[in-house]
Length: 87
Image 1: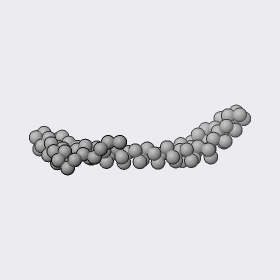
Image 2 (image 1 turned 90 degrees about the horizontal axis):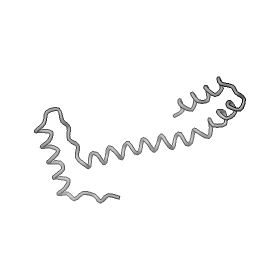
Image 3 (image 1 turned 45 degrees about the horizontal axis):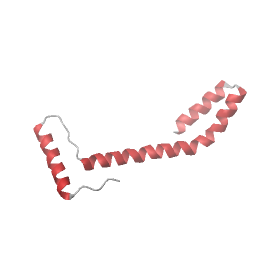
Image 4 (image 1 turned 135 degrees about the vertical axis):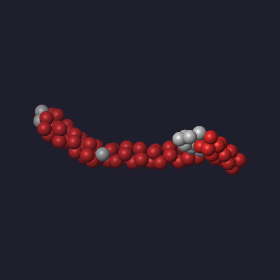
């Protein structure tokens, strides 16, 4: 796990980001703290998607298996669509 940056490093990173934004047109600089926050938020969303899929998969899997065994393409298509919609 990464150590938190010291207050001096945070201030320096903020100053550098501000200088970059002031010196360059149409450029947005992001501090390391902001990047860590964005990655954390993206990780939460990704984990929720994975957990949701793992909860839904056991419910739709029996339908898909029975569709494959019976050779019913329409049933397989419907089970696949239901799984995609649920995710």
